[in-house]
Structure formats: C-alpha cells, structure tokens
Length: 98
Length: 272
Image (cartoon, rainbow over all chains, first blue to last red; front, side):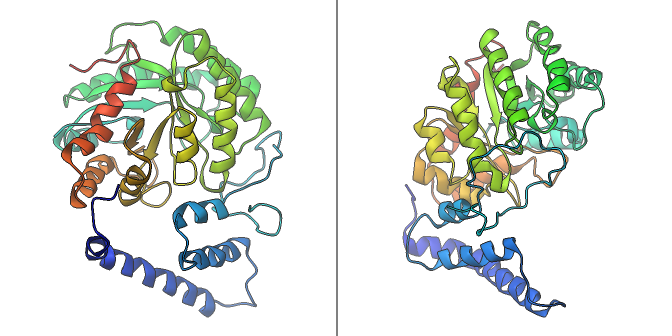
C-alpha cells in the first residue's frame, strides 16, 4: 500500500511529472513541425491511443497502456531470422492489440 | 545498509563499477549469462564466456568484498539456431559440479533463459534448457522479451515452465512490468523488476508495483550491462522507497532478504 497521502504524492512528484508532461507535448509538436505529408505510423497511432487512457478516469493506467502496446497475436514464427528488434508497439489494425 | 543486486552483467562493466557498488552497500551479485550485443561465431566462444563467469569475475568482485554468483545458459537471442544452441547447452553440465566458489562453484542454476522474439526455435531451446535444469536439479532465472513481445512471451514461458516438474518457487521470472507481474505471482513464481532508465521499470514504478502487489516473492535488480543501464539502480530504488515513506524493513526485504531467501535454495549460495 502507498504510505503517502494523495497530497503527499503530488507534493513529491508533481515537478518530475510536469517535466515529463511537457516533454510529451513537445514531442507531439515536433511531429507537427516535421516535414512531409500526414503521418501514418503504427507507433504514433498507438501512442495517441495510449494518451487517451491517461484521462479516461479508470485506474491501472500503466498496465492498460502496456497491454495496448503489446502483441496479442497467437501464432509463432519459426525463426527470428530477418526480424527487426522490438519496436515498442504493434499495429492496432492488424489484430495486435486486445 | 547492504543490498544484493541479483541480476547484473559485470563482464560489461568496469572495475570502477564494482568499487562504486561496494561503496553503496552491495555485498553480492548474481550474473546471468546473456547476449554480448553481437552473436558469437562458435560454441567455443561460449566456453570462454562461461570460464569468465565462473573463474575470472568472482576474483574481480572479491577485490571489493562483493561475492559473485552466476547462472549459465545460451540466451534466447542466440538460441534461434537449434543446432548451435544444443552445442552450447551440452557444455553446461561440466560447469555445474565445482564447489570452489572462486573457481566454478558459483553457479546457481540455468539462466537467463527465455524468449526474445517468441519463435518456435527459441521455444524449443527454452524447453530443452528447462529439461536440463530438471535433470540437474537446478534453479532457473528467466529473461522475458522486450517491449511489445513481453506479454505474449511471458505467458509462453510460464506455460513451458508449468509443464515441467520444477517447483515454481525455484524459478524467478525477470523483467516484469505492470502488465505481467500479477500473473507471474499468481502462478507461484518469483518476480524480478529490472530498473532501467528507458525500458522496463523506473525506481518509482518499482515502488508502485510493490505497493500494488506486495513485497512477497519479488526483488529488484539493475541488469546493468553494455547498454543504457545503471549499476547503482538498486540503491537508487532504495532511496526512492524511503523518500515516499516505506519502512526500512520493507526496503531491506525487497533488496536483500528476498534475494537471499530465493538464492539460498541453491547449495552454491551462501553469504560470508
């Protein structure tokens, strides 16, 4: 159990997470300023869906975001030959997400 | 204060790191065999690595009063070629028998085995290394996959382990996060939280997980290696827990007592 009160949590962590919040905002602004046509990237789509979870009023946000970013497929490839490393997210339209 | 870092890859770290860890209170570490950042070209390369883990590193650690223990295996990243993997695995039993802690008697079990990209080939070698642990009555340290592959891989690994006769209380599933730790603990395994700056968990999230899921059968480690990682992550997590008011007994439990309890199931583990 958390030994801190809600107020103590805010007192302890607000500045740290204020900085992370501004980082996320600046990252999204950076994408907007980037050159090229409209972005179509499965990681970006998953990221924006994950941001929605932050303010949906339900608990276990970290767990639900990690689940959103997870591969939920059931098939196993024979070999990793030619595969890329972990990308951090899956395509939400290819059945990857729950 | 004293602590154990139960998962760190010291072959990738400098001697200065041993010194700083000792100054921060580290008295023992365990070092699982892992991927070196590139694929080895021969089984002989693993033989040399196993000798480094069982002969050289214990002596380097001892210079700073740190006891060094290890786990041997072929890691999942290099286990995708079954023929090559079997050649490596066949060498492991020779390293399990020594009793001299500074020369081969520091092997605690098989690890870190697991999956990387959740392939059939990786799963075959995982099952064969689980069988090796069964045959030689060894404990098991498990690597779970990265990022989007972790949830699926953790479940595949737990299913493979549950099909064996190994007591889940002798198995630690490492690199758990919020979406995998509940099932790991519910199925009777031990859980390890890896403190990384970008992936896995931060000290803050490790403390959150302890608050949500309790302090039984769980530890934290730095998994310091050649990548972005911090060999002082465990003492930093101790500070984080104290900062938010956790009792010193709780901090000691997850950073010393629990690792000691789990590791002491191996006859090769004892603290001096």
